[in-house]
Image 1 (cartoon, rainbow, N blue to C red):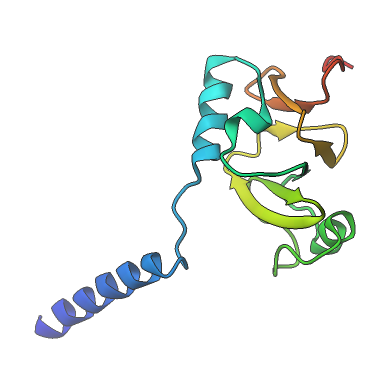
Image 2 (cartoon, rainbow, N blue to C red):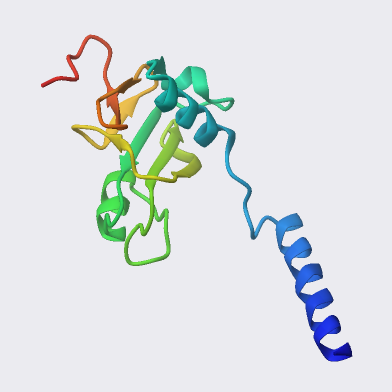
Length: 140
């Protein structure tokens, strides 16, 4: 019994240490904002939902291969063979990756991989949201 308690305490302490070192990442505020937007059926400019500087965003959905992501972004982003879960948003500022965010649920859609900071996030039916350039009709 004492060995089990020691093991449990060590596990808890390791988890706390990993969280403090950034190994275990908390959900990003953008993910919560996108989820709220989806639930409300509203549209918004993606840049209005972020609190960091960026001028280009790339969207990759589940099972996009690492090589395809690197070809579009121009640098390594993930270490696995493919992006395993959710939608991956890669934000760049002047050609440098500044932030990557995985949005659980894989509900983000788009016609292209890359958009500027003026891109809109609009409801697209059945719980999906679509990245849409300003003035574009998301129905097409």
